[in-house]
Image 1 (cartoon, helix red, strand yellow):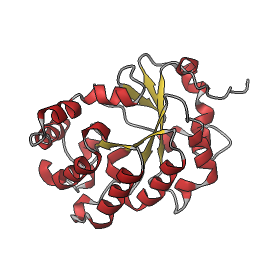
Image 2 (image 1 turned 180 degrees about the horizontal axis):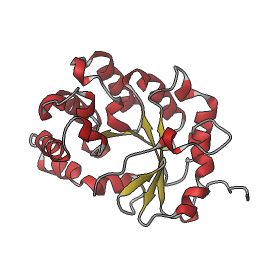
Image 3 (image 1 turned 60 degrees about the horizontal axis):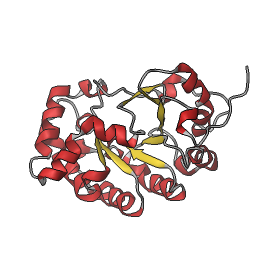
Length: 242
């Protein structure tokens, strides 16, 4: 097998690839700031390629440090850092989310909240957490995500969509329009070339390109601190429902 060339700063060098997502939520303390992971994430500096971070609330401090070390990389925090909505406890999570909003330019994805609210939650169960996000990040640094089909474990796509719309009713019309450009906002962060879907940890923009994914496999491998490409079970990501 020929060696995979390094990722180029030019977006044209890796057509259709918009970003990567690293599942960090079950990793041990200290993993998010390991030199190997920081080095792998740093390979995306100067490119139009985004890195999504999927982690839990107790890892937000480490995530903030990672993002601070790499200001030239565009980071997206998935699912608000997975607060424990089922325990109705905002305390440490709220402070840590405020820190990453204040000290970095990370973008946060409004998604995954109903799955963290326990079985069969009411749609409005996540409203306090979502409002905290909007207060901290503003509409310019917020994306909407469906978390479908994982969402189906707790609620329905229609219910979450309706709740997302209800969350925006108190916003200024311009701010409301900014968030309601749902897939447009996602596309603007993921390279501006149309909504991105996820394939084994790689966000693919436009037509699927297996060669582009292969060319970026070394980046995904570096993000996993391994010497071989990651297994799909390690980095499988959910596509946004069209």
